[in-house]
Amino acid sequence: MNKLRAMTAFRRVAELGSFSAAAADLRISNAAVSNYVSQLEAELGATLLVRSTRHLALSEIGQAYLPRVQAILDEIDETEAAARGLQSTPHGRLHVSAPATFGMLHVAPCIPAFAERHPELVLDLSFNDRVVDLVDEQVHVALRIGSGLPDSSLVARALMPIERVVCAAPAYLERHGAPTTPADLARHNCLTFKHSDSRYSWPLGGERQPVSGSITADSSIALREAALAGAGILLAPRFLTAPEIHAGRLVPLLRDCPVEAHTLYAVFPPGARSPTKVRLFLDHLMGFLGDPPRWEAGGGQAPSPSAGSATSAPASQSIL
Image: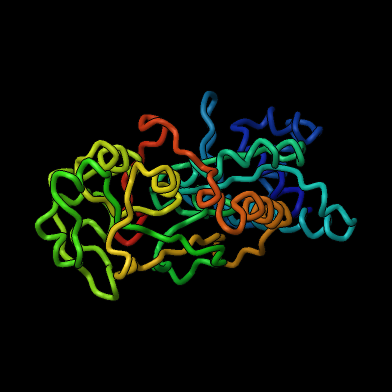
């Protein structure tokens, strides 16, 4: 048995959902595809695909086996491409995951130029605040923002600091005054991110200050809009608030008590070597974000609230 061909046949059947589609894609006969998969199952002593006259599905073992087969075959493709000097012409699928708001504001705008530069890539973008399983969901690279990564099995690269700021609209400050110390926040209406480690306390000046308020949300854009309307005081990343601060629509507060910064990480599947296409994407993204970041230089204006609403994330994955 040619194991690589058998693994390739199994992969394409699983990805395309049928033997005939896999046969057409691989330019071999249906019988050859079926024979390769059967040989692979016999070699493993396990059923990978559950077949019926009208239905084809991965078995439980097949579901666990597929992502590992994909990683192996992708690694082989990358190695062969490197040997042929094809690093500059990446191809295939690139699945990128990013937090909802950051993805909409600062990843999506860089995608068209990257796609035009690398037309042989198929880009698959997932923007939400759920912590995805990189192996199960076949993600090549995930962008994550937080003070650290709780899963030690992940391979991560720190890309840049994500500064945060406490701020409020001039209208709110005219009505309620500005806090001069972190303790003053106890008498103010604080707008809090529902699924963050900062929902009940904010890290200011090396300590955590308890906060509360009448509005909590799972969308940082919704909270920013509430702050702009004068509804309360907001703790948020500068990639969301800097344009509003530069325009005077939000005022930074408690500058003598800096907020603990977060970090933007690129996270890779356990044990994976970063493919050329991932490295090229990260280089492109970092060039697009700039130094200083584009939001500090006047770029990155947020979309309407409906465009950037976020889904929930566990408390360990702080998005704000």
